Length: 272
Image (cartoon, rainbow, N blue to C red; front, side, top):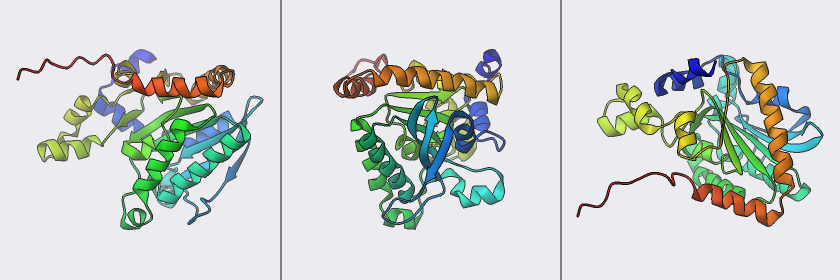
């Protein structure tokens, strides 16, 4: 089943990641965690339905769960703003990260967004600052953090929940600094060349694993139930290893992980 997905080109994987029948964060939360209790609000402005946060049990371990939720069906997608979070969504996530650190709970994030919401209201309430605060806090958070890209991983809206000890991607997920349509519009003034842009951006799990941007690919070919079963086993094993580390070791390894990104890329010699 891996072979079928491996033959898909980057644009086909982009379409698969955006598919309406693709499992969302709440589907994974329901399958992976027992006794999940959702927690709402950022205690500054309000609650953002595009971001789900809460506490649940992964096996015998209590964990904090954060997920960007696109929703199913037109009504829910609109209510959740199609997974494009407002500043209060990222601040809600930040609040739960800090509580997780206080009580020693690992953090597991599910990322699926085309990008953070870029409306006037979001900018007025500090969208850029909210994302920046998350990046800073996650880099120094003193508990294990795992982020899983389950669909689209778009720009800073995805990165705000993807600074982690390990970043995993589902086999047909994508992760990029800009959408292929946006990239094509900038480079060629033609959004119709999104397919070309998708290939050049290196947005697939296979490309990003080779660049050390992600650490593991989660196979999808055997169906949602088996994907969740595999994912649960890997999460438990990885968290058991991470929880055995001292705080200093955990933070050093996180820092070193980001220093390794792209470290095998060979740039042409300067001819000047």
